[in-house]
Image (cartoon, rainbow, N blue to C red; front, side, top):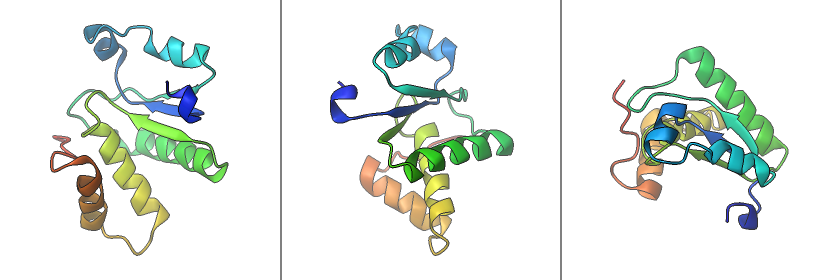
Length: 119
């Protein structure tokens, strides 16, 4: 279904263990079989990526966006890790945006539970 929306790239922030736990162990392979470019950056649930990993994710995300590629960022619930990465991307793209404004923007889109990463 994602391919029907024109999705070209997907950033998967779930660990392989999570994919197994939630009974979708072949999810990454399935994306690839449907011609979607997978960027797998496993981050344990409740954690935040270290600075180096975050910089790598943001660099790849910017590359996708600058190439006008339809891109999705996802974790399991869509509120913690994916919203954290999205907030970092917003801050990188806009010098005028404050961290709180980025968080508020995502909470307006995803609900009050957005950006619930513990660390």
